Amino acid sequence: IKGSRALLLVALTLFCICRLATGEDCKEFFMDFLQTLLVGTPEELYEGPLGKYNVNEDAKAAMTELKSCTDGLQPMHKAELIKLLVHVLGSQDGA
Image: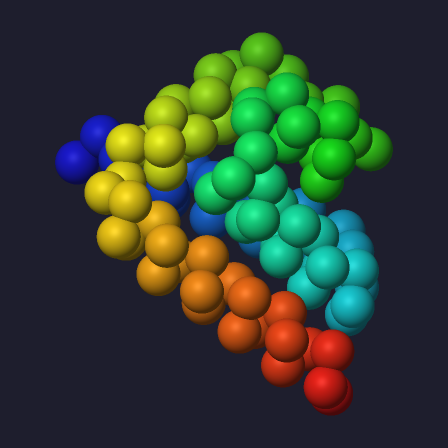
């Protein structure tokens, strides 16, 4: 339950941010965010995809918790998410 609440919070946050962006900006942000979430650090989230946004302390705490959830995934599941990300990024390059 705790992890699903964190995912819901992040989905809502991403929805709000993507409403500020348009088209490719939103897709690029989402893919960069997801990639960093899977293989980066919380600091890389703030310096990278979230770098141009003012992330308050509560949001940072939520991102840290979400990152700990993704870090807690079984390696097999994390690998499958990374494969999916690579597939999606590859299909965007071919579009």
